[in-house]
Length: 75
Image (cartoon, rainbow, N blue to C red; front, side, top):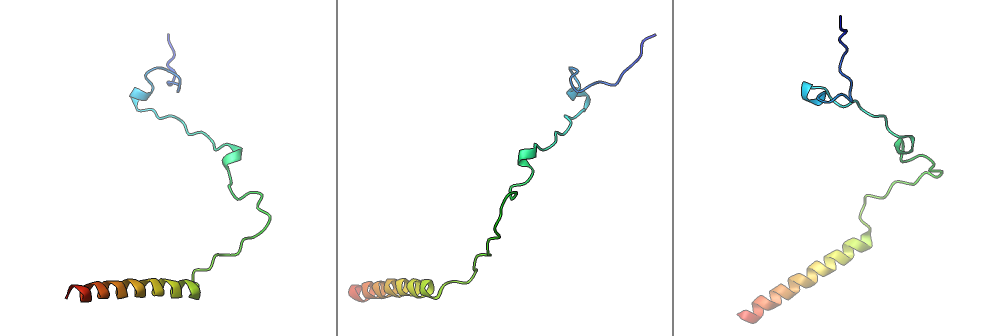
């Protein structure tokens, strides 16, 4: 009399019978990426600085003046 045993993961052909590879645990070094941070970082400001907005508007104004000048020169 022979005893039947369930196929093991290392048995050839186990994958062809619909068996999946068992999940592996996460290594301890990969568990947390924030471990060891001693100081709390303040959240970054989401508002635009007024100086940045003024500079952007100045560049846009110069481009518009240049385009209007090119149109006037063609006429």
